[in-house]
Length: 263
Image (cartoon, rainbow, N blue to C red; front, side, top):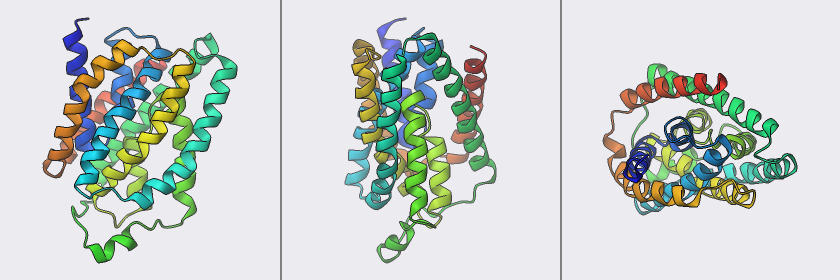
């Protein structure tokens, strides 16, 4: 596959992540497996660092726009970082290239993609239209969850899922955050989802790197495309036709999930 195709794929995924908060692992990992022929464990490890650096670029852009609700990000990280470390320890013991680990990663990835597709389709079809802005006086109330423990528990589940499959921090994250923080405007939900994924995917990606599960040259090509893509996406976020984009993505992710389960 030509190198420019990898760069274009990185740009497209970066753009979608910037627009919707979705698409890092849920799109890039299947693309690496099915279009570029990358082994599942290498695709997951490479994609984790791809997501970390791509979403770091998006977080910088969103922080400059003052859209990142840091309280929400902190609560999610309290839950996600410990379970990511525990999952990495289990992978070290099992060995990521072993048949058992490969089967577990592929099957779990397929299920995660189907859950992501269902979450996105539900949000597109039934989700209520959220406000795009919130007054400074209401922001403190909007960043308080229905129960303070729930974001930590959700972060713990996502920490395990992301470390094992590189999927889960996107559409599933956005959908759950919409339930936990119903007063928070959509751009801030997407900003929180992108920002908390940075330390999680960086930790998980570096852990996979110690297992030899990262293709560094492939990572460099993907980032060449994704960093300008996510920068552009975060600039266009407030004008994107959210329902149409999510509907199309849900169909693609459902297709990839079925293929991975039957892989």
